Length: 308
Image (cartoon, rainbow, N blue to C red; front, top):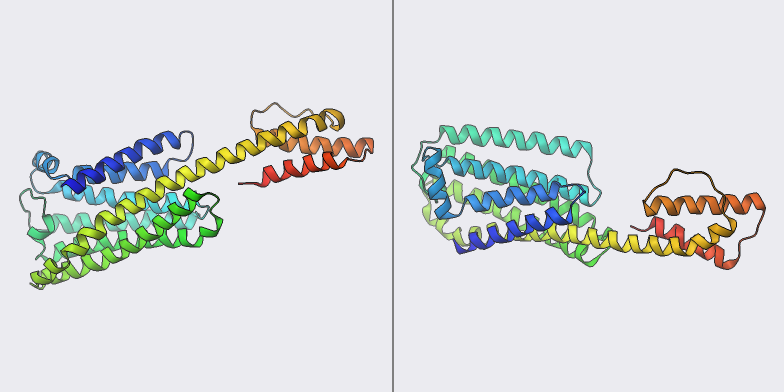
């Protein structure tokens, strides 16, 4: 239970941090943190024992947590894909469709499992039922495949990382994907063994399960947080580069630039782009040769615009 509490605190803290860091930006990864946090918090033993009886005392809270985890893993895959520039419409459609099918399957399987009174060891209690094995294996397989896909996307994007936190975050997500696959295999073997009456195998694999489950969650959560931090650091670096380029190019614009009557804007990248255009227009219009210093200022401005 202590480990679950630690995970919950870290995830809730991460959700709050991402809410602040991603203010005014895409919130997919923040939503992932919220869903993961809700899953882990609801699974803390004393809270589970207090809440599940209010839902009928038949472990409905287990189903709720598993649905939230499937949704969180889906938003993780889509959020990371967007964060590293790998998102495609077909990927979103595939994630939504796959998650929907998984949720339907586990809900149907759960409803058909012989009900058990509130317990924090749901699969140990009902694991001999083949429907319980279907319930567990389907959702765990989805989580494993989604984490593996997330890890693969991150592995392919490592060369494009621009900051240290970006690189470390991507590696954490890759490692989380590996643990997710290992956990998927472990759970499938445990569930199959339980149905076959091989409780000894289930007990033998309890340690790998206890390591890979929180390990995957913590690695993935840390990776998401580092990706967002790296993105903010990169934004700050680019903003400073744009401001320096603006300060250097403004005197050149005052001497040579035209006034193209662009509408006002507070965006430094837009302002810098317009200054570049107006300096080049003015130099051509007046047939004025740019000095080496002017050309260097233009080159720095173009480099600042192209930086990420």
